[in-house]
Amino acid sequence: MVKVLSPGFYSTIQDLGRTGFQEFGVPYSGVMDVYSATLANLILGNHANDAVIEMTMTGAKLQFSCSTYICVSGADMSPQLNGVPIHLNKSMKVSAEDVLSFGKLNKGFRCYLAVSGGFKTEEVMRSRSMYKDVTDLNKLSKNNELKTNINDLYLNDNNSLVKVKNKHFSTKDIEVFKGPEFHLLSTKQQKLLLQNEFTISKENNRMGYQLSELLENNLEPIITSPVLPGTVQLTPSGKLIILMRDCQTTGGYPRVFQLKESSINVLAQKFTGKTIHFKLNSQY
Image 1 (tube, rainbow, N blue to C red):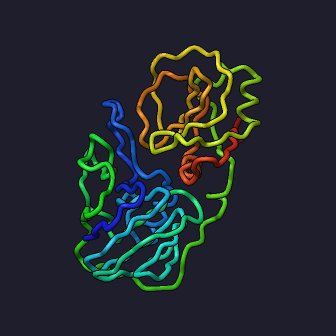
Image 2: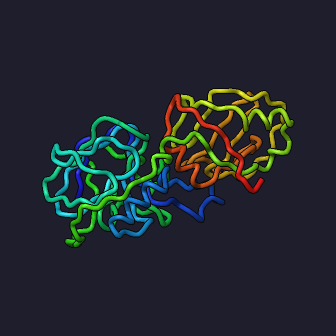
């Protein structure tokens, strides 16, 4: 069992998402940065889909009631075990009464905590990913108690850790494919999208990232059509919205781009004021 002493700014339980229910209007959800979360699980020998804690901007403070192994990945939030700094991307043994905490955000935006066997929280529609009106809880709160494996799993202690390429956090390039309505844009609009940099506005969350710069838009709304994480919509006002993991399943705005999966992961580690550059996939 893991007790939440403090949840941080916005912390949730997530796995790889809720697939197969989009026809009923149920979002995919799941970890924002699949790369980082999967890395933490695999370092522990977990299944890639085992549930983790996703922490946004600030980390949680957690107390363990049993011995287990953990791995912290993603954003560098200065993790500490009983006040002693620990490495990212490394298997660490924790004991009963140990406290994991976080401090200054040094790099990235979302951090992941995996435990041996994954967190055993509520499962709805084949997923433990928290989402309002689907699961009982939509985020972690103080004094929540999270179930983990009660058996004493054994992993070899070692000093090795996995190094993650800094490009995952530093690159501005967001690789995209042409969206279904890209061809409706003028040549000038297409060039502006691919040549300019865009700034992430303060309106960014698990549902979508809005960009600050506007693109002149005279396109007609489209018939409500399917969208998915990574779809880039162009609103009538000229605002670009990049849909993220908790996005709706249909929309009526032109879909000008579709992000590669790896680019969704990169974008998930960026926040207000950071700039991005759309890069058309080389096959085009």
